[in-house]
Image (cartoon, rainbow, N blue to C red; front, side):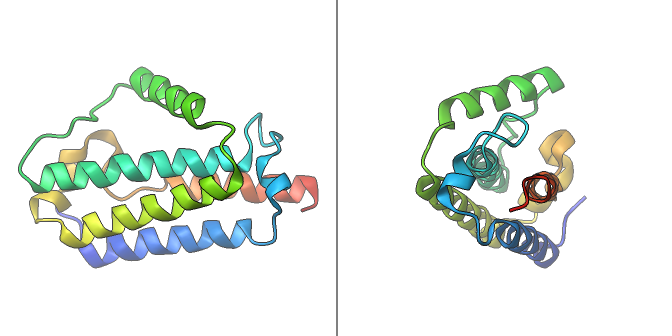
Length: 150
């Protein structure tokens, strides 16, 4: 089933704005302390950037008429997340912010250029094309800020 391009763009812009508002006022030291369920806020940002990059490439791939290369089992998804976390953890806050900004722009550009096939959510596996992933992480960061009094 094809997603509405404008609605997708609105969703991804809105969820990013909500995430950025939750980050507002945090120092680099706060962003990099590993007190958010064992992760730093930057780890969450880098995780989201990792998945934005994957989703952008998938939109381009499927728009070009090819099959998804990220149809994963739950176990593969878990392993892939661990790999991404391991490779990116410890990056400085400035790089995490840059990665987050650039990856979202790549995703928005891919959605802008997507063909009707590239907007067919059924071709993306269990994750679909629209995602609540970022909102989930935003909620965790919001909870963490409240607990820490930040």
